[in-house]
Image (cartoon, rainbow, N blue to C red; front, side, top):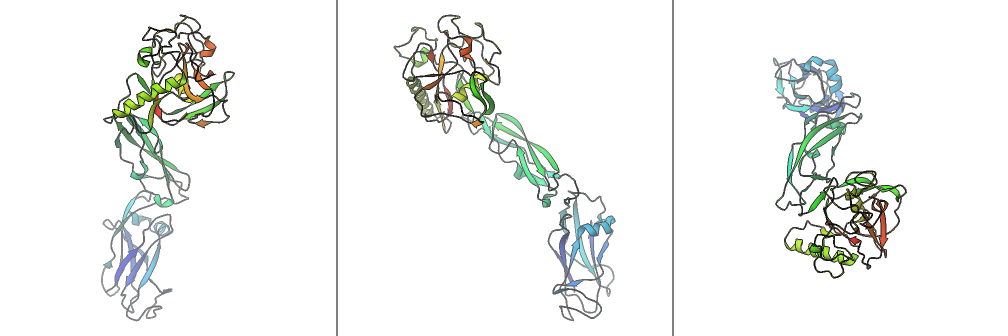
Length: 442
């Protein structure tokens, strides 16, 4: 008995889809090969009234057989699906469109036997859009929503969503990507992730999924700190600190909402204004400030509360300005001017004041303008031109001060203003605040 089978996967944009093979065809019987779609609903349509032998593309006619024997022939026939559909559109039983799933089956009709005989195995496939169809890709399924715990305290990382999608015309070399990208930081809660697909014709489709970041057991913002998310800002100011450049902070960090106080620093005999526990700790050298930060790092590590790769330290100059601005681009984070109700500066009080006495910025940070200058971790150096990510300067003899003090006029208290100072020299207008951020070696 003849046996019919198929090989390959048919697709509308590949031209030749797959091959039907007929084994053990009786001699002297040309017969008819049929192929039908949606076989449960019919109608059938003939694929060919003959067959070709595997050994050569020679059609069998009558008793002549090329490449086989008188008793049997292994034959094959290629199906051009586009041409076949245009000839037999009714055979689909449904509109021909990318993403449509079809069922198909072939058979050989023996003229000596009534009806169709020797069915091939059935197969199921999805039609694809051809390069000239100008039809956007079709998502047969989008990525499922995902829920992940925070990988750092209160911060999550975006996972891969592209592996969870199915695109109907993937055979047209579809490019798939997502926004936000894999590995970017995201905050606690729900974030929409959009998956895009672009085909060879430039058509683009998209679908959305939801990423939920839940608090991990260690998720805790240190008391008195604010979380600063990664981002990009314009660092510097024309006529103040140039060149103005675009700076990206690629990691989250935490920054103290207030300057370190006398009570927090503890025994220190050189205060310029001793006896006021809530005054900022001033007359502090850069090295003494770093030593205090190291103590916090040790204690947090012993308690198991230190994120991997993070430490307590002085802020870099870029971290300080990014946090100070809190999303603003004005000269001060309070606007285009600074007065005595907004910050302790320009001898408004003629001495430091209790930390936190003035209104906070958008991140909840206080006293960034005035009260005391604040040490930064960086060495002082002129800005380089061009955009930069995570800048940090080492190797210089002078260190950076930011923010101005109770003594200084408003111009020295601007968000972008920078000052250099000898790190071993204390001064009663210099203090510091702390960040919890990636490890840096000055």
